[in-house]
Amino acid sequence: MEDCAKREREEETGYRCDKLVKLGSFHETMSQLTRKIHIFLGENAVKMDHPLRERDENEEIEVVLVDLDDAVKMVKEGKVISMGTSLAIMLTKGRKCRSCLK
Picture (cartoon, rainbow, N blue to C red):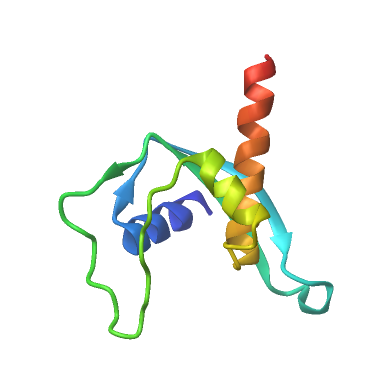
Protein backbone atom coordinates (compact mmCIF):
# COMPACT_ATOMS: atom_id res chain seq x y z
CA MET A 1 0.00 0.00 0.00
CA GLU A 2 2.88 2.38 0.74
CA ASP A 3 4.23 1.91 -2.78
CA CYS A 4 0.85 2.94 -4.19
CA ALA A 5 0.69 5.97 -1.88
CA LYS A 6 4.21 6.98 -2.89
CA ARG A 7 3.44 6.66 -6.60
CA GLU A 8 0.16 8.57 -6.32
CA ARG A 9 1.78 11.41 -4.36
CA GLU A 10 4.59 11.74 -6.86
CA GLU A 11 2.26 11.57 -9.87
CA GLU A 12 -0.40 13.92 -8.50
CA THR A 13 1.76 16.49 -6.71
CA GLY A 14 5.26 16.26 -8.19
CA TYR A 15 6.78 15.88 -4.70
CA ARG A 16 8.93 13.14 -3.16
CA CYS A 17 9.44 12.57 0.54
CA ASP A 18 11.88 10.74 2.78
CA LYS A 19 9.30 8.91 4.83
CA LEU A 20 5.64 7.90 4.64
CA VAL A 21 3.66 7.46 7.85
CA LYS A 22 0.24 5.83 7.67
CA LEU A 23 -2.25 7.93 9.63
CA GLY A 24 -5.17 5.56 9.14
CA SER A 25 -7.68 3.85 6.87
CA PHE A 26 -11.32 4.94 6.72
CA HIS A 27 -14.59 4.26 4.95
CA GLU A 28 -16.02 7.43 3.45
CA THR A 29 -19.58 6.59 4.51
CA MET A 30 -21.39 3.68 6.10
CA SER A 31 -23.36 3.22 2.88
CA GLN A 32 -20.13 2.62 0.90
CA LEU A 33 -18.20 0.13 3.01
CA THR A 34 -16.41 -1.16 -0.08
CA ARG A 35 -14.76 2.22 -0.64
CA LYS A 36 -11.89 2.77 1.75
CA ILE A 37 -9.40 5.62 1.83
CA HIS A 38 -5.90 5.36 3.23
CA ILE A 39 -4.24 8.50 4.56
CA PHE A 40 -0.47 8.89 4.69
CA LEU A 41 1.75 11.71 5.90
CA GLY A 42 4.82 12.35 3.77
CA GLU A 43 7.70 13.84 5.73
CA ASN A 44 10.48 16.06 4.33
CA ALA A 45 8.81 16.62 0.97
CA VAL A 46 10.93 17.90 -1.92
CA LYS A 47 9.75 19.10 -5.34
CA MET A 48 10.86 16.70 -8.09
CA ASP A 49 12.87 18.16 -10.97
CA HIS A 50 10.98 16.08 -13.51
CA PRO A 51 7.39 14.95 -12.92
CA LEU A 52 6.71 11.25 -13.38
CA ARG A 53 4.01 11.97 -15.94
CA GLU A 54 2.01 14.76 -17.48
CA ARG A 55 -1.44 15.25 -16.02
CA ASP A 56 -4.45 14.18 -18.02
CA GLU A 57 -6.25 17.08 -19.67
CA ASN A 58 -9.34 16.52 -17.50
CA GLU A 59 -7.37 16.59 -14.24
CA GLU A 60 -7.68 19.83 -12.31
CA ILE A 61 -5.10 19.59 -9.56
CA GLU A 62 -3.47 22.62 -8.04
CA VAL A 63 -0.73 22.07 -5.47
CA VAL A 64 -0.79 24.81 -2.85
CA LEU A 65 1.74 24.84 -0.01
CA VAL A 66 0.10 25.88 3.25
CA ASP A 67 1.44 25.99 6.81
CA LEU A 68 -0.23 23.28 8.95
CA ASP A 69 -1.83 25.76 11.36
CA ASP A 70 -3.25 27.71 8.40
CA ALA A 71 -4.57 24.46 6.90
CA VAL A 72 -6.32 23.62 10.19
CA LYS A 73 -7.88 27.09 10.19
CA MET A 74 -9.06 26.55 6.60
CA VAL A 75 -10.73 23.25 7.62
CA LYS A 76 -12.47 24.92 10.57
CA GLU A 77 -13.68 27.76 8.33
CA GLY A 78 -15.11 25.32 5.79
CA LYS A 79 -12.62 26.31 3.09
CA VAL A 80 -11.44 22.71 2.60
CA ILE A 81 -14.42 20.78 1.24
CA SER A 82 -12.82 17.37 0.63
CA MET A 83 -13.56 14.98 3.49
CA GLY A 84 -10.32 13.05 2.96
CA THR A 85 -8.20 16.20 2.82
CA SER A 86 -9.87 17.64 5.92
CA LEU A 87 -9.34 14.41 7.83
CA ALA A 88 -5.70 14.21 6.72
CA ILE A 89 -5.05 17.76 7.91
CA MET A 90 -6.65 17.18 11.31
CA LEU A 91 -4.88 13.82 11.81
CA THR A 92 -1.56 15.46 10.95
CA LYS A 93 -2.23 18.26 13.44
CA GLY A 94 -3.12 15.70 16.12
CA ARG A 95 0.07 13.77 15.42
CA LYS A 96 2.21 16.91 15.62
CA CYS A 97 0.58 17.99 18.90
CA ARG A 98 1.20 14.59 20.49
CA SER A 99 4.86 14.61 19.45
CA CYS A 100 5.31 18.04 21.10
CA LEU A 101 4.16 16.58 24.43
CA LYS A 102 6.71 13.75 24.45
